[in-house]
Image 1 (cartoon, rainbow, N blue to C red):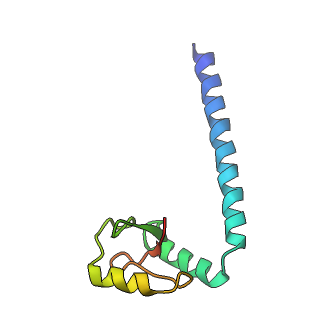
Image 2: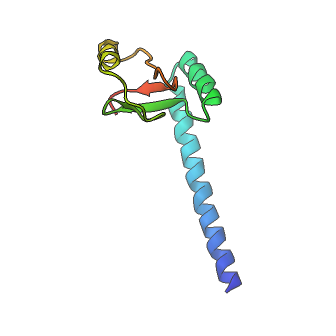
Amino acid sequence: EIADLEIRIENALAAFNSELELIARERSETLASVSPELISLYEKIRTSNNGTGAAALIAGSCNGCHLSINAIELKRIADIAEDEVVRCEECRCILVRGV
């Protein structure tokens, strides 16, 4: 029974490591298409914000701090060009729009 558990643990660990490698490759590919300035800003925010540098803007709320964004701020965000960086006023995460 212990040998069976050890095999299951090894298999789970191998699957985990495989998934981790895939995520690392995908992250590297994504980073190659992002400006160094944006990467630097993201890393700075992530370091000071418990590991979260960007969050989705979903249904008028920041998915980083889960607070609702007021209507005036939502209008301002909607009027900003898609390629400009928008940050949550509360948690300062980069808001990912159109998710």
